[in-house]
Image 1 (cartoon, rainbow, N blue to C red):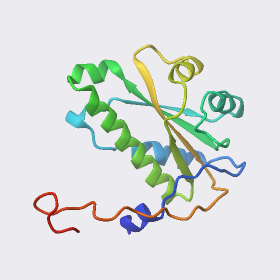
Image 2 (cartoon, rainbow, N blue to C red; image 1 turned 135 degrees about the horizontal axis):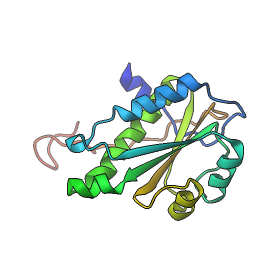
Image 3 (tube, helix red, strand yellow; image 1 turned 90 degrees about the vertical axis):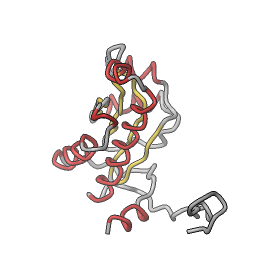
Image 4 (cartoon, helix red, strand yellow; image 1 turned 90 degrees about the horizontal axis):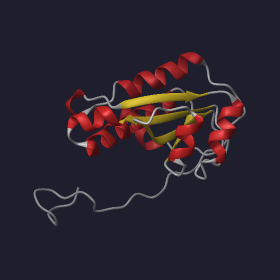
Length: 169
């Protein structure tokens, strides 16, 4: 069942003008909070942008956002926590896993979502009054989908057993 969800989930870039219920937002955030984290560092901070005027401001500095979603979740890294761990790269992996959990939970709740990296970090940091150590890394646009894209073709021969060039999966 989970594999089916993974295979059917798509990046949704067009949304209906419809509010997202609070209980659904809470479930999406809960899924993110339970993502794996190196050394249980949990370097993430999530800022939920719901008000239309604030979403519009974020969209202006986000060329990767094509439509106004129901909400925008800004996934940030707490750089103090990341630096304390001694491996800032791992904190990027942690927030990426939190984002994936969000996407899967949103899909399971009948919502569409898209991860966006094409945005001005400095502008979003200023718009959201983020402290210097809280760095916005990803935007996740979430809403009721107004499109149903077909799945893209997947590359073949990307799995190897025992050694590169060995039997393909």
